[in-house]
Image 1 (cartoon, helix red, strand yellow):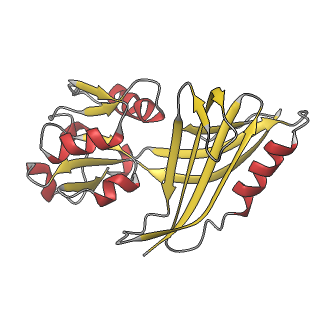
Image 2: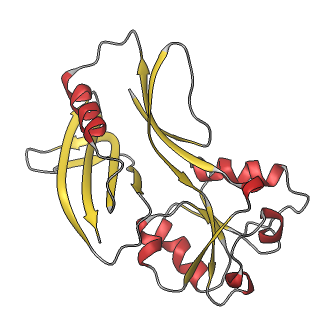
Length: 219
């Protein structure tokens, strides 16, 4: 069983795949940047400015590469970071611009302007889960699938996050686990939020991977 983020929908005859959500990529700039006045932008226009990106290995990098490959102007990328908030702070300070989906932390950050890409340059982030059709899923994996399937993706004002990592040390307390590397995905239905309240938190362990999920309502 895998939870996947990709720039293309996953299709394979031996896999059971479900699309959970899809998000558009945007160009984010400082409100002080000349691009901030634009209603939409081509990647070639954006490429005139230095980019600050997530580190290689993230799906966002694949979207950036797709756009770079078809652009005549090759953008400069002076900085890569693993932390979304750091990228947002640098962009809001007008150090550079970024290509990003609409992370909740970006919605809450002052000084950022979101610009849609023109239709011919749009890239989509697909969030899916997949497992072999022949696989015998254990109870914990089946439980996680039910959690994902029961989400109401059409409700206004919702969000969800999933974090997971390989277990290094486990303790007998809530959340008492140390992992080698945390990986996380957050997604919302794009409602501009002024506040939020957590509606559920669930956690579990399958094989050597610990996960927890949380969902919330926004207003």
